[in-house]
Length: 258
Image (cartoon, rainbow, N blue to C red; front, side, top):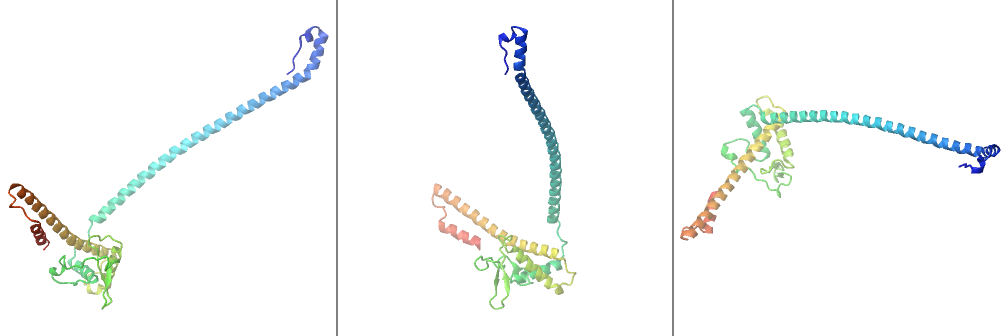
C-alpha cells in the first residue's frame, strides 16, 4: 500500500514529486481493490442466484410431494375399495351354495366313495364314521395307497386336516372320476366348478362327522375323568369309603370309548 511521508507535503514541488512517484503504485492498488470488490459482488450475485434456485427447487419438491400424497391417498382408497369388494365377493362365494339336487349329490358322493375304496351306494350304516378309512402318514405319505392285487390307487384323506399338501390332488382325482362317469348321470352334467365345490363340501362333511364324533368322545372322557377325581377327593376327605379307585376310572373311560 502506498504511503506518504510528512516531508512530501512541505512544499508544492515536493508534493508533485511525491504524487508522481507514488501514483502508479496507488493506481495498481486501487485496481486490485476494485477487482476484489467486483469479485465479491460476483460471489454475492452467484450466491443469491443459487439461493433462488434452491428456493424454486424446494417449492417444486414440496408441490411434487403434495401431489404424491394425493396420488397415494387415491391409491389407498382404491385398494381399500378393491379389498372390500374382494371380501364381499369372497363372502358371497362362501354363503352362496349350489341348489340342492339329490340325484346330483348321490352321483358326486358315489364317485368320491369309489376313490376312497368305499361302497358307491347303500344303506347309511355303510358310511358311519368308523367305516371310513383312517389316515396313516406312514402307509400313505402322499395321501394314497396302491392295492397290490388290482394295482388301483386308493385315497386316504387326512380327516383331521383336509387342507394339507395332497388335498388338491385328491379333489382333482374326484372331479375327474365324476367327469369320467357322466354316462351314469341322467341329468345335465354340472360344470367343473360346481362338481369341485360339491366334492369339497362332501369331504368336509365326512371330516366334520368323523372328527366331531371323536372330539365329543374326548370331551366325554375328560368330563368323566374330572368327575371321578372330584368324587375321589371328596370321598377321601369325608369317610374314605366312597372314593373311586384308579381301576374304576379306567373302566369308565373304556365304557365311554365304546
